[in-house]
Each structure stands twice: as C-alpha cells, then as structure tokens.
Length: 258
Image (cartoon, rainbow, N blue to C red; front, side, top):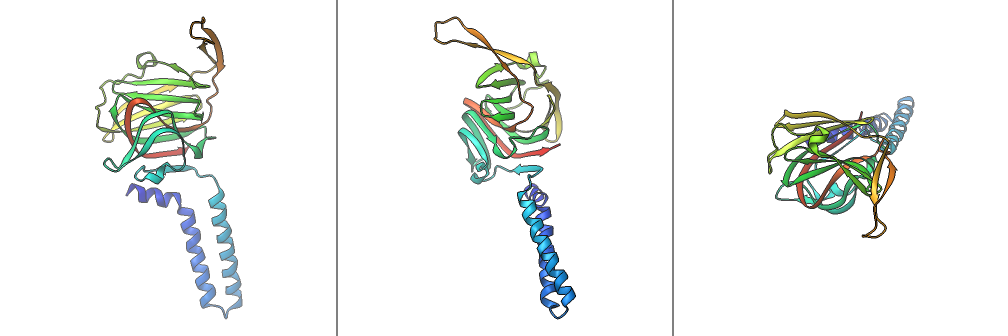
C-alpha cells in the first residue's frame, strides 16, 4: 500500500496529463466533423504532451525507494556489499567503505530523510550531506547511542555519543526494526527514532563549523603533522556506510526537500 501511495504521488502530474491526452484524442476522433472542437482537442493534446516532457525533465521534490528488489540500487554510487536479500525483503549494508550515496540528490541542502532499519551486527552508518564519497557527515547508530562522524577529504573525526549528547535512554534491540527520520536544515540535524510509531529518541545535533585538524605522517615513524581542513558540508546527498563486519538492513527509504 505504501509503495502504491508513493507511486501515485511520484507520477500524479504525468497521470493527469496522460488522462487529458486520452480525453482530447477521444474528442478529436468522435467529433471530427466539428472543426472547432477538433482543433481545440488537438491543441489540448499538444499542450499535454509538452507538459509530460517538462515534468519528465524537471527535478523531483522527493524520491521513495522501497528496497524490495535488486533494481533499487540503480541510482546509488559506492563500493561494498549493498544488495537485496530475498529472505529479509530489504537491502543489507555491510563491508561497504566508503559506503553508498543516492546520486539524484547531490546538490540538495535542506531535506528530510527517513527509512526503516534493523541492526544485525554492531551498528548502521547513515550518511548525510555527502558531496562525494570522501566528504560527508555520518551518524553511526549503535545499540546505545549515535556517534557523529565527519569525513573530510577521506579523513575522519569521530565524536562519542556521550560527548555529543546522543545517548539512548534505552538500548536498541538487535534484530528489531526501527524507523529513523533525519531533518537536515542549515547546520543542524534533527534526529528522530521510532519503535512501532512510538518516538523513543528525539534530539538535535549541530554540524561543526570552521576547520578540523587531522594528523598526517609522511612515513610511519615520522612525527605527525596537524593539517587543517575546512568543513564545507552545506549540501549533499544521503546514503549508508558500514565498515568490516558491521551489518544492518534497510528498507522504505524516503528523501524529500523542505
């Protein structure tokens, strides 16, 4: 039912335009003897046709991906295991570094992103504001809290959930489905987690601004040199990333502009 709802929401304008086309063609066919109606019907058909073309080329305001078939991976870019599991009727994300991001929203800034998830082992890394696979924010959802990660030019800065104020009051259960909703607006992220439509976590986290210093060694035995990198994560797409044996399932991914 949810898939059908988002299908009609996605193609509502095209359905209306095609319906108008059919009516116009019907009028033109049955009323050929009436020149005025025939001309009007032809004009309506042409306008509707160009309307469909315009809608097709216009950027969408939202995308819904149920992750219930292998083809749902078509517009995602990345590396690692990110594929459909028949037994779970959802996608698995594991051994995926630097992860996967949705390619249709790379220039989006303010948006809502929601999905259902199940942690199988360790955690789920949720990527947001991904300019590319080397620069993004990652919120690592574990059983006891969320660890924010900043990835700049491939280097990481990690904040523990207690320091970030993102500790859960009650641990998430492994092998149980939850829903997560993230609102990205300017430099803050609102995080909501639901258990059977009941809100169990509601918090806001601000993306740090300015510069981050990363330790760099030319050789293994050299003294590290701190190199500053500017944080520029004002826009970018969403996605998922799990390293090594970290393993989670995801389904019903929705991203929409606000």
